[in-house]
Length: 444
Image 1 (cartoon, one colour):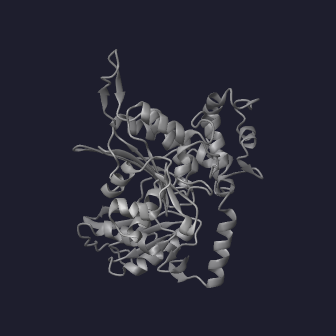
Image 2 (tube, one colour):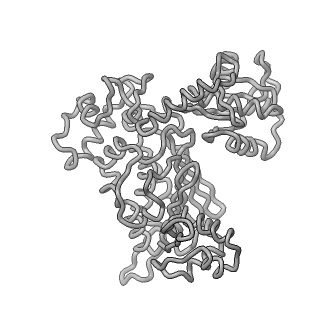
Image 3 (spheres, one colour):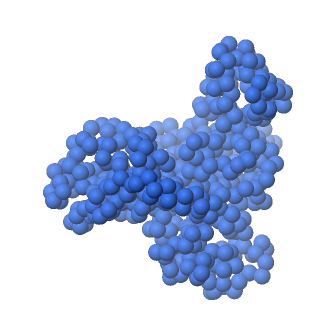
């Protein structure tokens, strides 16, 4: 979506617009970002006086990146903003786009909200009320009413395409041309009002209502650099993101085949499965887009969604129960053939990677999201330091070891050993068995 900065400035400061002459008061800027994210989002324009006079922002090299890092470090839940330089009247201004969220977000340990053009500290009672409201809805955000959207904002053509894809899986499919019947069948209406899930799946312009619901793609291959911001419905996002990765993958000849056979560096079926799962399981309350990064070593897919308890990264390497974060979205993707039988996708990715001659994928649980690494060829991800890699090579799969065993093999202290083992557990390469002094670690 193109932002008309001149129009924003002309409208003056409001609950969704803040004008700053410089980045000197970074703390206040971050507090304002937290306040905007807690409600409907907004924009902060740096290099403009309160009266609308454009004075320009003296932003040094790397200062925008440092600002983003400061925002991430001092907000909770972390807020992912988009910072860009813009030219206005021959002068450079900095545009900080703040996506909307459920909130409340803390800045430096305090909660804020916007009251007109002012950023105001939230009382403890108000913060706790909003936090409780968010917790009540944490398992059902996709079911929330999209109150700013009507049925006219949904695209019947997308529903028609869905019905074509779902033939054979959707019993007694609703008749074409009756979108309300389909939405009711998929439980995507609430008292006749479209839900978040219906907009994400079938909206004409979903990012207008949910600007965070996009996929940011980037490919850095050799000296080349390709990037794309992928919007649209979730089905289109998956298709476009897979095409982006596929066009940036190199092809080589399989020398082990009797007949000449060309194959991609990564199996496309594994790429598709991982991207589809990222879309299905992400937390759509998060202000961060799904991120896809391809380089010469690996494909890295990240989304802002926690791994549902009691699943662990190591559990994903074997048959496991399906616990979808967004069951309605996941069901629609399943019916359309974008994901297969629930609970088997991660193991099919492992099989596809092995069959293509690649190292196994890494499934990594992080504080702010979930990451999947698909190594190119036999390369080992740089996320695994040499020490851990060396110890893993010496450990027998399925045989438990104690922390002190790891410390002895690696030649490190017990504290360092526990840190290493915890990191490997987060990557799903080992699993923890037992508790306290009886804790053992098993190579997955």
